[in-house]
Image (cartoon, rainbow, N blue to C red; front, side, top):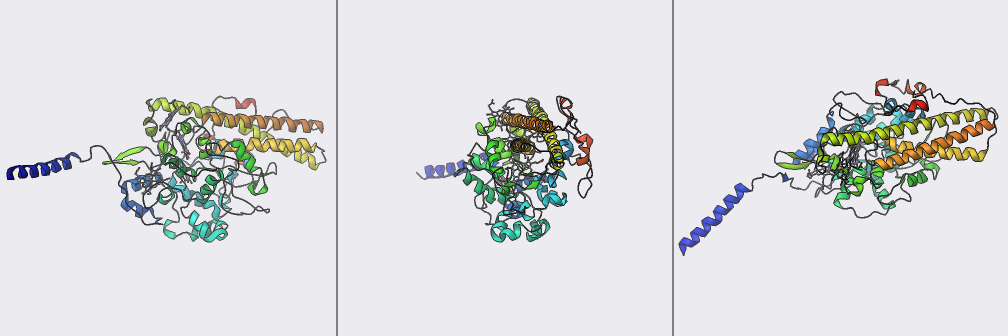
Length: 488
Ligand code: HEC
Ligand code: HEC
Ligand code: HEC
Ligand code: HEC
């Protein structure tokens, strides 16, 4: 009897020893979840518990490989900062009148979110504290606590209100994670409002892997009062939209519904105008192939990666091309070369359409300038035709801005991007013919090819006297634009 008991004891002990050695992680281990104090903003503190994720998050500071991405050259090892206005020269004319027409750079890593705001021409941050909306993790709590004092404070003063140590902190752990259990979340009032507007209540884990990014990579406007002064926190133009269907048509209807959405005055036309910023979420979620297949932003921009014996989500968020298509290959069996060809083929077509729509809209702006000058000299126009052409023009402009300020050069939703730009070209073409008709009726001659004089808008910009950088200009991939307008 005794011998059997001893045998069983040894057997059990042996079994545990065997299990201990055999369960040593051969397969990568998921990171264990521990609790972090509520309201802990400082990533360094989070890093004490999650060192691998923290290290990987810090890498958004590092420049990315040069020469990989064709259209999204951000902060690469060549350390060149790419100027959007030189890339697409017509935009210097179209944005002339406010900060975006002065200095507008390609995005770089999350680490630079606030640093870039500090370094950019001050016209870009003139609205004040409200500009910190998709930058500082303190935006929500400061808006709740200090309201308009914070939102309308001069940009530098608003920045000084933030705790000194984390004043230059961009997207942080607390923006995307609940400290208690690390589940995904958001940290912006505008996305909470936006989701309510489109009637979306519960978010699945996969939806949170989109919304954690969408809280900043979505569009919003800075509401204005009658005098053009900032009237509150940023708001999404999502009236009339629904989950998976925030269409450009709905966005434009919302943006053209009242003066609160008109943020600036376009110099060439004199029109008060709305604007559309970084609508990655809106374009992607409008029935793209990947959205319909339930692929999330994090699937492509934060692929699983192995660090030592752990499996973590890569927090070094960047272009998937600069990360060697690692994310894509987790689903696609094709090679990185094949995938690169697909992406560039899509982006070439979209860039070409952006160029076509851009010059057509800029041509309209100059025609409006001619019309306005002639009106001052006494030209009498059909008011109905004039209002119609103004409405068409804004429709062309907002569609163009939607796709060109979206940061994937169409990849996030190629067919929708093509549709929108096709319509932008149609609206711009119709505007041109209406304006020419009005001018002809008034006996005013205008040349067949309108000279855009873009260097006038591209050189001597802002306090840095920025100049056109010819080597950065994105050339029409199909070489057709010269048929329709000069490209400078
Ligand atoms: C708190 C706001 C915020 C959140 C949350 C956020 N971003 Fe960003 N993102 C930014 C800002 C601001 C920039 C531009 C930074 C700059 O240029 O200074 C940026 C830049 C980027 C870039 C360009 C990086 C490069 O190397 O060129 C990518 C890609 C990106 N974000 C993807 C994502 C994804 C994917 C998510 C979700 C996992 C996400 N972002 C969440 C604000 C945010
Ligand atoms: C199917 C994969 C995929 C999904 C899903 C995806 N992206 Fe992208 N994203 C890309 C690719 C590819 C590019 C183009 C990169 C390039 O041209 O270098 C890109 C570009 C970007 C850029 C610009 C990067 C830069 O360096 O300028 C941002 C910002 C971005 N995506 C954010 C998002 C957000 C936010 C979501 C979700 C709403 C999302 N992406 C969903 C693949 C994806
Ligand atoms: C822009 C959003 C964003 C930021 C900022 C962010 N994370 Fe994450 N994190 C994610 C996403 C998305 C996942 C994947 C979670 C999922 O699928 O449930 C993730 C996953 C994790 C996980 C689970 C293990 C893993 O890697 O999948 C840990 C731990 C983590 N993050 C820690 C951190 C820490 C620490 C910071 C700050 C230094 C941070 N995260 C900043 C979006 C973010
Ligand atoms: C989570 C899985 C997943 C990831 C990650 C993913 N894809 Fe896809 N992709 C799909 C699915 C599913 C489809 C649609 C079904 C199909 O035809 O394969 C698709 C379709 C495509 C298509 C054809 C449709 C179109 O829109 O033109 C291309 C090109 C493509 N993916 C490229 C990429 C690239 C590049 C990446 C990385 C940046 C990527 N995918 C990442 C799942 C994924």
